[in-house]
Image (tube, rainbow, N blue to C red; front, side, top):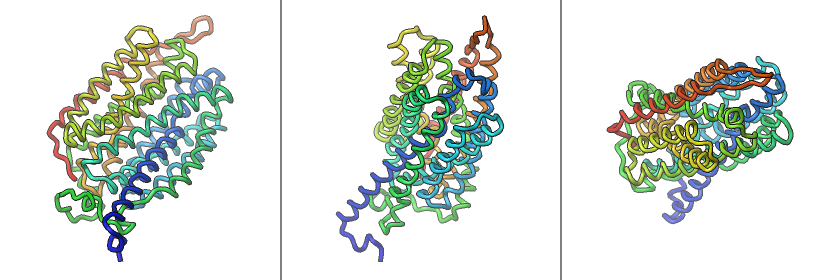
Length: 433
């Protein structure tokens, strides 16, 4: 006998509310902490260069290894996640990434670091698809923007923890702890997520979420999971979203990967000051991600393109202020805050939610995987191109390196503009349940 048949309506409501809260806490905090296991390299670039362990080009190779590993992992794991339990996929991703970070903290060999960081990318690619499947299992389309926005804020939580807390640990204990500290923390987080998360209402004997919420939906097309997954390759809008996301991720990871070095070398900041500005960016990102969900759900009735355009315009203007505005601390704080808020909204939508809205329900993970592979190929390409552009303009005067970021900055801003135009081209795209 199903649990729903033994509980009163109030009992079902209470159980639903309890587990929806648990789902959001598990995927948001879990994903926030796993992010600290991918950003350690961004924090320790300067000490690794200063100690002569790696060059700028070698750090670009290591950074690219993570992104290529993540692109492949997110694509293949995205398809696999539609067939397996989100709870297991998500917690395993955190645990395996944590263990690889512990090994990374002791590696000073280029090829070992590249292999470890590529594997880290692969296992990190298991987390996002399983988290989004949990959202689609537990929330309806008219709630999804807000829930996805809250979950997407986990990126900013992880970045804030990395760029300030982990940066402070590195400043006090050395570069190795940029990897070791997140690794230790995330072993505990993986155990907590496994004990806290539940897969879907139906696995607990509860009615589907659309039935519980009383929302009318189109009758589902009876297809096997693999047939639904195959169908996404014929949806043109998903391909456009994938390319727009790739371009947006160029800028996103350019700032994440090279922002600290830029602020130290061009703006003359200390590691902690640079970490502070990056934290402003990520803290604002929490608000921006949540705001995006409410704006697209409430103001535009779950339509994403109008909100995408608003947030993209703000992001480009903020980038211009960061790189070409006056050297004033207050102006920089405001610019990083608007950039972080706008970018996080775009990560939520162009980086996944928009594609999930369009894809069949049984292909949720596959849609995330397809967009993800493009996104992180863009990020990986950025790492190599940015390193080359920065190195090409580097000079050494009296034994001191002077970095030239000018060409790289033009590259980063241009990709954001192109991403905005592509996303805006999908203004009238129809969404599914």
